[in-house]
Image 1: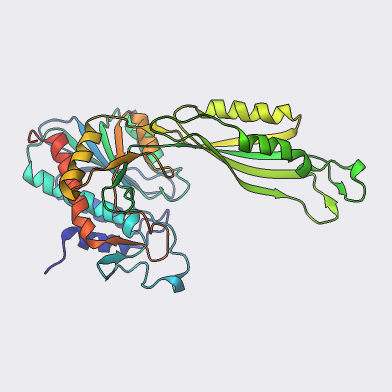
Image 2: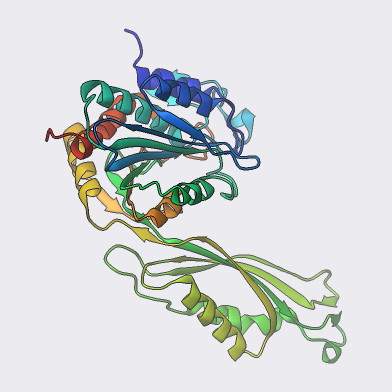
Length: 381
């Protein structure tokens, strides 16, 4: 039996060593495939990052349903710990192994095949199908989706619905989809004291000691209670650095911390609350910030309905719409006002050695995408 087209494309993409921000020809492959279906492309490369936007319309231009994803992958890690070559797709015991198998080259393959099957079955479909693809999702996310969205907004290109191919499933395909994500806000804090000899503490000011009350207060503050879609905002200290030797009182303490925050607050409020706590301790400090992404949510709408219905039809299960996990490029696309869901394979092995995807899930994922397109862009229920 010949292998399915989704499996074949996934293998081809895995075999391209596209470690972020490299693309290794993945996007050229995708654009060539889409060209044959009548898609028109715009290259939107920024510095070291390759991006493309593709669009195909039939009888009308709206609504616009977009597939969004990334061709870049994280590094393979210790090669000796892999059972197979991470950049040579390998089948074993019903699974396909390779870096990017689950995150997210199988989703890209499923998007392509779903689009092909849909435009062949419904050549006079309403609206448009778009592809927004970057090679910067696993990297610093500076020159990827965020800039493509900015350019599309300048062009007044609408996006009504967006399916992001991130690996959303937990135990089986379709059991979880993401209908939102928490915001991410990072603080870079330096608390200043006075360096000195440990034998002469009266001549020094220990930056570690004076930080304790403030950091404890930050760690134990209840920022909000969350809501029906999001858990309570989380504050976590990730890095603390101080000191040079056991006989030297440290004059500075450096700390990095991160908020994963809900729609009950915003980064302006969090910034103000942190500064209030630090000021209450009368600290000499420097503090800078990086907004990694604001929270977004698709609480209801046609895309969420279509996604749940498609998964029920293909997988015979009721899906959960959750906002758990890290960030995704959906946070940038949300600025367009689009309804957004993330639908993808099981995420248990992503970023791990021996990353894999269940082979039988590949065609099912393409079928889910196809049925979502059918519900949104055809007049057939």
